[in-house]
Amino acid sequence: MTIAVGVDAKQNGSGVVRAGVGLDDDALHQIPDLAQQLRVDDLKKAAWTVVGPRKESDSRTWVRATKAFADPAGAAKAMTELNGPSGPFKDFKLKTKHSFLRSKTSFSGTVDRVGAKGLADQKLQQQLGGSGVDPKVLEQQFNQIIDRSVRTEVVVDLPGSISSNAPTAVSGGVLWHPKAGEQARLTATSTAWNLRPIIFGAIAVVLAIAALLVWRRSRRSGDENRR
Image 1 (cartoon, helix red, strand yellow):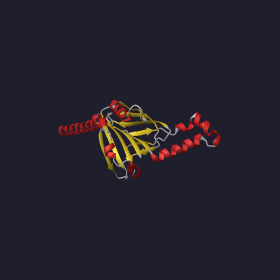
Image 2 (cartoon, helix red, strand yellow):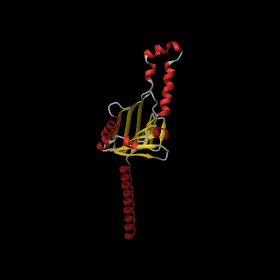
Image 3 (tube, one colour):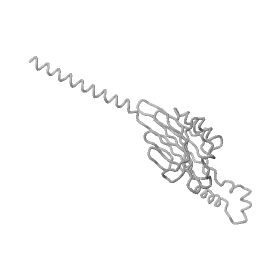
Image 4 (cartoon, one colour):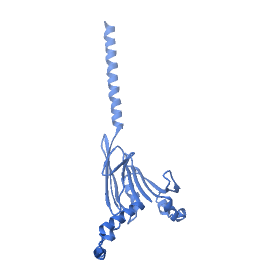
């Protein structure tokens, strides 16, 4: 199973929050009536668009939800609606800062994936102490099993050139794969040039040069006619 969350931001601070759950055939066989069991009324009332379940090109059956936002505060609100009070996607924030020639967009958030933490508590360590089994090793092995069963990914698409702590770059953005038992801090910033004043400034310069050339030519022509 794959749990995917994404934030697509535009230069003006608007954008879309995306979320999806993808099931392979083995997982889908365990929930044959997935469409009937889905409870998405609350999301739809909150202006989310829900599509699926439907099989896609990766051979997984996906249920996807999207919600547009008008500003960074709207992005944070959408993530709160999606995550609920106890979900793994915490404090997702988007910030924008505009100057005359460029815009800076910043993203931050935390993914707190539940792992096999209980295997390393003090009581269990005492129980396993005489067995020769290292609880930490056992915890790592169980976390690996969780990661093979449930894959989590976060994709953030920001305008302009992006710098981040993400391990993977994708088209237009960056990608994280938080692991089981990990509290992953996600950060990304981007800078995009505001081409509008640059373009109009260049046009103004070209027009000024053209006007100067025309003026010089007309002056020369007038001088020659007086001769």
